[in-house]
Length: 73
Figure (cartoon, rainbow, N blue to C red):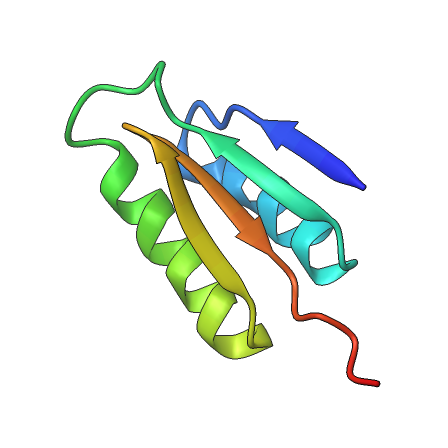
């Protein structure tokens, strides 16, 4: 499953965390934010990745994909 989110402020990252922590891949599109505004949101996403052993990829400028940890076999 894949969910695309377009946070408008730092307060919206709760939705990114919700989907990611429920093992849903999230595309975080920050293209509507001013150039300095995305930094705290990307920092939050990086924390999620480290804490939950996931992966983050930059798809385009200001567009990131957060992939939850793959199930271990």
